[in-house]
Image (cartoon, rainbow, N blue to C red; front, side, top):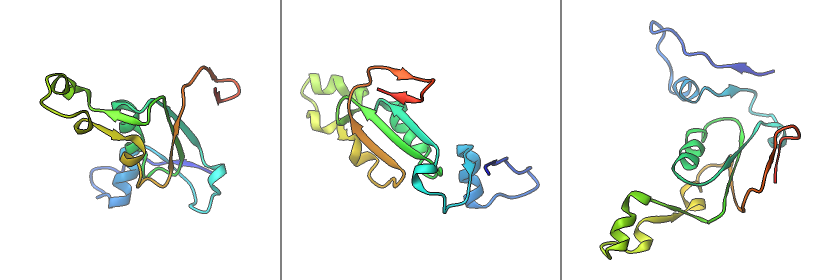
Length: 124
């Protein structure tokens, strides 16, 4: 059985774990639930939004799969400095797996999504 975590009222101080739960708005469930039975979240794209979503869900009791066509994240606001030779390309890129390496609930896949079948809950 799952329950939604509600934020306590201002009169009740939150513990550190409650703060994490309230920030993420995650579902709580017993920690002994097998990995394959946990909700599975697929994030398509390892850009700013994809990386941010994966990091936000790092403490959630879910399985996360990040799918991207490249194996690296590019910090695009500094791309012009690479074009003007002020920075090397390696200064504004990082492997997605390296960024998310400490997240036990996250898997990173290299691939291109062709379509999404919401009825079958499948990403192809």
